[in-house]
Length: 90
Image (tube, rainbow, N blue to C red):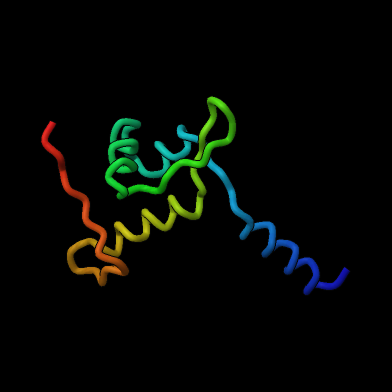
């Protein structure tokens, strides 16, 4: 097997969509479950993907893009898109 074939197979395996479940989302973004669902309702966090009658997940790429967008929206950074988070009164 030549190196080009091996490299192509590795690349396609790493770029296919991956679904992550809530515990991994919580650990990855560092937010609480209620915060994630509140941001989803406001359209400020990726929407979940239904996996079954009682199972949901999120596309890893969308969650990672959300994190990147936040880091680029920090003061002193060049924002990619005008993402703003607003704290709502409890």
